[in-house]
Image (cartoon, rainbow, N blue to C red; front, side, top):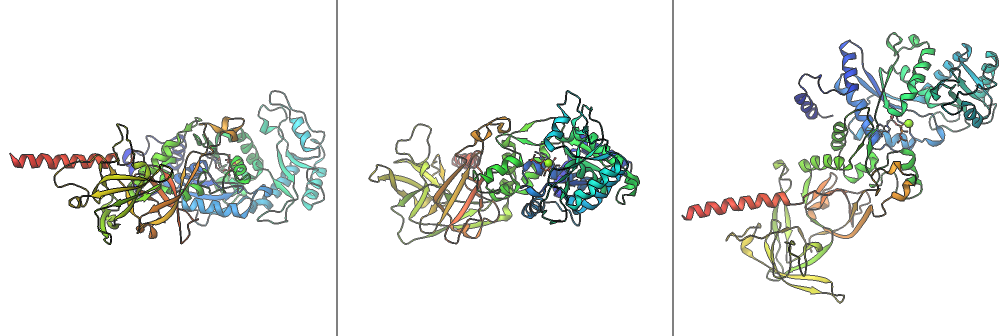
Length: 589
Ligand code: ATP
Ligand code: MG
């Protein structure tokens, strides 16, 4: 997080104590008592990160920064069939892009496979784990429904030596997948299903992206996660509410282990698991498994398709890391399950980009305009401000000539009452150029408007009339000859329903119109060398150059539309003009 944001936080929170969420309050207290702070972000590399993960990243890395601790990046890579190095790399890129740094603290649960195995053997020896040999579906049946007591497996009390021997042979690869499993011996009657002899190891003859074929047994999430935390000396293990029921198991496992032998763990102090509510976003699906289905079924073009809620997709679409961090910060950390409006995320982006995005002109649906009284061979360079919010961004030259393009929807043959833009006989302003008047609309053979014949008033250069006459609209434009071709991709929500994750048939709620491609756009020439950063196309929104761009044709994604286009600018101009008018009147009298 930038220093600026932290200052803001301190300013609104001078005591440093008021307004801390329950996790920060806990950490604050621990720090005051001299405890150290170590968190981790533990993704499974089985897909790209989504915005929910961004919240967990901001929390884990955020508290480490705020309270003088450290945060590890640890891959929970215990399911080899679904994981890959590509996902590992994508996740690292996303965390870095969000602005966080794990320095030399990059870890993998697979680094601990040997240690986990040895601890498992010790647990067998001390009688709190056993090899079960009933079939996997039977294990489930014996567990029973939660409201009834489970039944013990016939193998539960097999001799320690037998379990140990079988477990070693499991590792040695003597058995088929599923022939045996290692289970913790806890309590088959527990009201908490997680304590009904949970599975610690499964046999899986699968190639692992890091350990190759070294292992054919793999630890379960529950067995690997807390132990990895302990091995890294994590003080606060922050996770989402689904894991609340796993906490007793998390603690039980740690209780079985010789934690004072763990170098990283001061005085064998167990990591503390604290749960918070996951982020849900309206009109958005935040489940890796389902997002993966969308990718695999070709509903979207990959994990970074800008319709997706992944960090990579937001980046491609033109979101900034600052806006996402700001959003996560504003959502806050609670225990209450809520769904945040997607408009809030868009708001954070607009606010950020309004401050820093450079303005350009682009026409998405070009309508040709010929200025009849403008000299054929003349070109003028109009001065346009790059960013009205940031004077240091300076100005740029935009070529103006006799043949221009304006937005088709800015013209109407028979305008209704409230339409103030161009129409036959009407005068409007071309942004920072001239006032023009439409003299005639030429139609094509289908009766569609093909071209406007207009005249300009040479005395209005810059966009205002010396006689003080006013026009009601300001249009963006590009010069036909100087502008460049572009494809522009406009996005809408990927789901038509606000809570797609609650629907049985969630795929039926996919918005088929979430992507609209405009192929024949024209953009001002300065955009040839811009767009690595998000930009504003005046009146249209914020856009980002897409990697699909070619030297012949730029491709831009719209990150978000502008809420109220030029309403504000026009109002300011009107006020300025009214002020000048008053001065003139005063001067006269
Ligand atoms: P999904 O539920 O989307 O499949 P996951 O929980 O399986 O995600 P992991 O890679 O295991 O994905 O998640 C890494 C971390 O991110 C976990 O600590 C998890 O609690 C957290 N996380 C996942 N989804 C969210 C969310 N929507 N909001 C906040 N944190 C989340
Ligand atoms: Mg998970």
